[in-house]
Length: 180
Image (tube, rainbow, N blue to C red; front, side, top):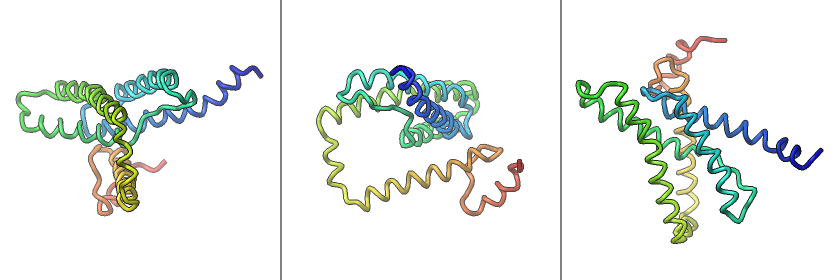
């Protein structure tokens, strides 16, 4: 096999994994909101594609693989929910389409702001401060991310798209989701 065919064969599982991450993370962001999950998936795919091309070219590691990140996804889900809460205060002024457009535009805007902040942090070598965090703090942070993913998965499964209280709402969720 040619080197090109071998590289494509090795890249295929990564592309499929990245695609599935983009789709599931978009569902987490759009659940319970008028934001179109297909648009968010497309935004994730485009940004993953761009960073997948630019990162290896600009870094000292040509084998770097980029993908959507769950911590950023959780932040974006909070941004969308905050916009929905703010819009709920003015229901007569803001239509559902305007709220969806505002939330959809907020996602790339937040991406640009986070990119600038992370580039600044990297240029100042401020990431060294993370090495001074005690292990229980890091473990607690990672555990809270895991719980947020776990809890968010039930909202995606819910027919209403609303958050499901854990453990009280799991019985209701089991009854409303049809068995296959």
